[in-house]
Amino acid sequence: MPFSWGGGSAGGPTIGIGRGAGTRGFDCSGLTLYAWARAGVALGHYTGTQFRQGRRVPLSARRTGDLIFFGGGTGDPTHVALYLGGGLMIHAPKTGDVVKTTDFLGSRYYRAVFRGMTRPG
Image 1 (cartoon, rainbow, N blue to C red):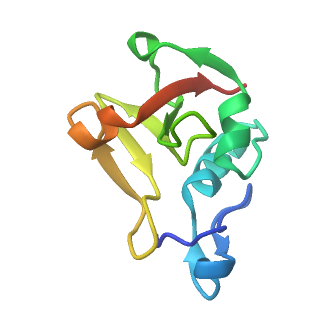
Image 2 (image 1 turned 45 degrees about the vertical axis):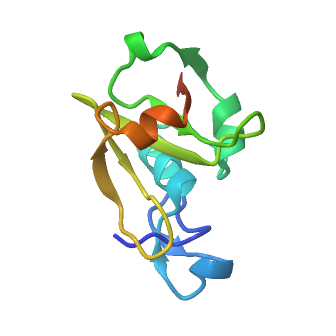
């Protein structure tokens, strides 16, 4: 599934906005919004909003379905992913890319910009 900036809803992939206009898919928060909607939990469609929803969990207590946040310095995180287990996450990384799994525990990049985890619901 393609990355589409602003794409994704509780019902699945959508046409994005701005850089995502004309592309049906998900951006990072649209993907996590969709996944949690399938479990009956409503999330906002913005990474910063999702960061404030749910309860914080330490990395050592991670579970499948937890949201993982990255980047943003001291402001809102700039990226969100869904933890799959075994150190893997699924995410919609950036324009021109596709939804994919990544070993975030084994990634120097993602570990360096890790901001925290939440458990919605």
